[in-house]
Length: 255
Ligand SMILES: NC(=O)c1ccc[n+]([C@@H]2O[C@H](COP(=O)([O-])OP(=O)(O)OC[C@H]3O[C@@H](n4cnc5c(N)ncnc54)[C@H](O)[C@@H]3O)[C@@H](O)[C@H]2O)c1
Image (cartoon, rainbow, N blue to C red):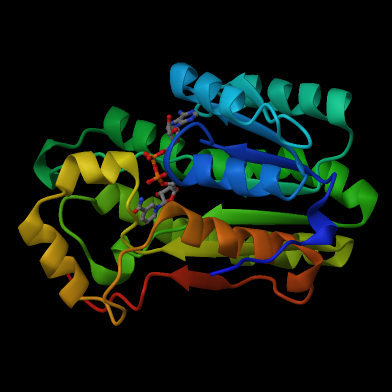
């Protein structure tokens, strides 16, 4: 197989949240491979530093900054430091999340707030920070990572699924409000992706077979399949795409 190069992504400033591992790391690699200036934020320091090091020969070495996205003020300061160093932000990928399971009866208000902070709130505030320079530039792309989970009604994930459903609504709202300034906002909805965390949590021969039976395509989704959708939507090739969801789920139709 051979894959596209997008000349419009070369030298663009791209911010990726949760870029240290999993899908985010695949996006850091994919955008760096296109010659973009990638900044990625994460709390996973060791993985992020290793990723940055592994991409030191990219046209622009990606830059990692430790940032706990639950802290809205600290996140704003990190965005300011990025624009001070690299100029206006062209692309924001809101990717960080945490899908820890929870049982309805055991959730209290503090846990609810923390889950919403890690899975939803930072999408809005990172978009707010990035939109400042995008509006000035008259162009920009924001990509939010949703999830197939709530479309399928998976168990023990009610707060995560609430956040992910909210992200689709947020995508529509931001697309409407920022569209007049040339900013496109879309949501990528992954299916079951073979990330290191998911493989560690769930992989058994039985679960793999069951999953493949529930997908139209009988092949697993790798992180780079999702990253390639992000490249297309972020590039000028996606010029008239905004306010919508784009599924990369191999046609997953049921759990
Ligand atoms: N992997 C899948 O099958 C799948 C399916 C559907 C949706 N998604 C979505 O895709 C995105 C990426 O998923 P993934 O599987 O790579 O997740 P992951 O858990 O493997 O990685 C998430 C990254 O976000 C970082 N992060 C978590 N909390 C943070 C915080 N407070 N501040 C900064 N960074 C933080 C983590 O350290 C990690 O590097 C998420 O939005 C997820 O909900 C993934």
